[in-house]
Length: 511
Ligand code: AMP
Ligand code: MG
Image (tube, rainbow, N blue to C red; front, side, top):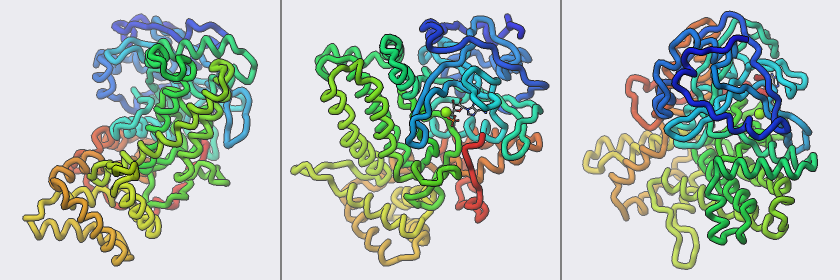
């Protein structure tokens, strides 16, 4: 394994903070090189957001570094150990089975950890080959950027490389390496690991690491006397709040994660580990996007409850550190108010209405309108993204331009078969809209209801072309999904209703 003295390391300052925790937390090892690596895509937007040199991804050395064929000077590659609950059962030790962390690099947004996903086997690979296939790597690459574009916290994707190396899944596919970036990849499962093994001192080390480097507000809150001055209760509280907010945003945009195991839950509240995820096409609350999830544990409508269950696992792990059972339970209980509030807020924004609470503390009209609308949409399985975007345009179209306004509202109504129910709902909504500046509500709605999401079939088309060596569709989608609220009139087709074959796509855990 060679060490590069050239860019991308040249102008990057490495910190390797996780590596400083000691070898209880990880195993040092080098990536396993892949033959004949090639570029699939770069993400210049992320480079510039982080203030990293734009030439950092263009050199031949960068290709070697980001395909796991060479180690940038200053990087200290390691695979971390974690455990977790998978599909509701304790799975024991897991760990980075195919992701290698290169270390932390300074950026204008603070230090960022860089991981190579698919860089070869590790001591935590169990029966896996340590690789990631082109198909699933393209999905994660595009979706992490799509989530960020939607304003939803996520790990990011810096670049994607491929190799002709065959990789066996259901079929023989080829290998890829995804370079992903986040302030930290610490998962609920990291804490569960040390709790399960009774390594209380190590768990405290990890908790202090997360608090000091990533969630310093825990210290402030405890110092202010919140959470009874208990910094570990503050940690659980912050993770609870971030998770609740993330879940509210997932639900509001119609995102199904697919594998909400506790080892796939970030303590920073980032959307993490994209596998069989899906953005809803037709609105079906019981939709299961993961073909391997036979019980529907991770169905769309169950996600908020599953997040609570996962937080409970984290709370159980942290309980010995918090050392106050009542306080631990009280913190966890707060999810039951924080999530609904965040969801109400997200849905009110989608409707262009204020998220009011009445003088009696009862929810305002937005709550009832949102609940009845979702029930109606579920009954008809109305396309989720198309509906909200058409509704936003209808509200944004000035009433004076009557023909345009009539046409815009007709295009929403056309989505429903049960017209009387729609008309009834529309009447009640119009009453609320009439109380405020409709043009302003419409503008706000267009900024909260995306035109473009990474529907399964869009990813599928990009994957099929990439398998033939054409990565142009990956590029097009990347650009489009990074600004999903903009019109992009030249890409209208990407915002249309999905083709019939979209419903036949089956995505499993195999990746
Ligand atoms: P996931 O369901 O992708 O979150 O993975 C669960 C666990 O399996 C984690 O410990 C992964 O690192 C590991 N894993 C998944 N796929 C592979 C693979 N192909 N090779 C090695 N480990 C893997
Ligand atoms: Mg995972």
